[in-house]
Image (tube, rainbow, N blue to C red; front, side, top):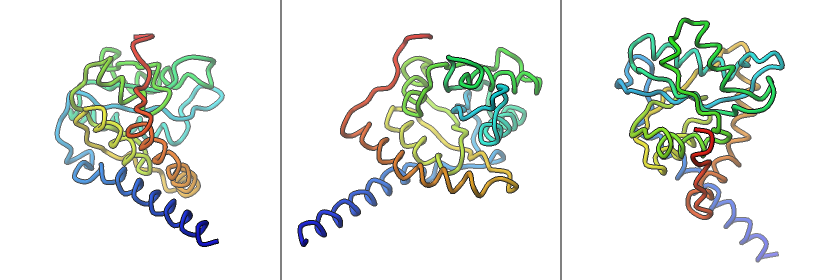
Length: 205
């Protein structure tokens, strides 16, 4: 019994330590659309889309924020990274591109990364495939710390502009994301420090 309790306390302590390490990556790196320093690129990770190929709420939040950054001349290019293969319901990158083109963003502004299956892949490829040195990350607030952590660990000088949720649907999305992030942050830490996972390579670029 004592050994089991000790193991449980050790596990909880380790989990808390990992959480603090990952979330600490966002210290001093969070900005609003108005006060973020200009960068050449904003990175927009993908998220779920509807069966008709339209961005769902979470992804639409990110795209609206990225659009604001571009219109405010805070960025020159938008790197759209997500699933880019499969049918309509899986092709996040195409859905992101269509949304922004409909908002009058020129095609030459949009850079597509169809192999951003995971946030790890997105950050790795931003550096090793698209040769970015710095960028603004636009993602959901609950996922921002992990995304910045992975960007920094892959050698990218990143800052974040959280894509705020519409209050009309925010609560269930936030609760689901926060629960997911408990495990996603642990996996991200293990990817970096234990498994040394590199992410998707040059294929498809």
